[in-house]
Length: 112
Image (tube, rainbow, N blue to C red; front, side):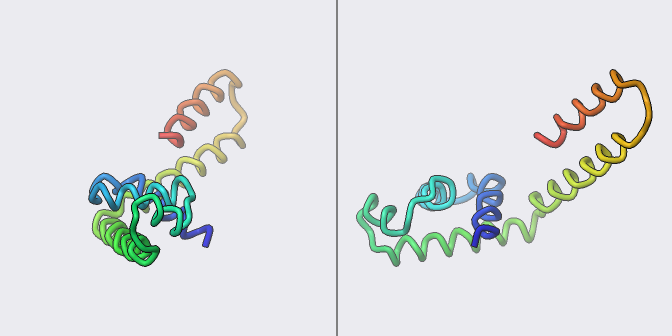
């Protein structure tokens, strides 16, 4: 369940703006703010089933975008490669100041 929450949060970060405003609100409240289906339903005066259905449709849409565009998976692969370079670099024996500069650049790449 936690893995799904993380994945949906990541997909929402990449593709959330492509959803309708209502879908964005529901996804944000459920996956980012961690509100329950009942809390969201109460806030919008709809049934829990309506919230559930909206979330499932939104999840499907986000997965379809990822299946076609691969933005999340490409980013994860790139970050993994950068982390590998960073790890290998730390094993090298060189000037500490240069090492810190390179590590700062790699960290910036990982954070972006």
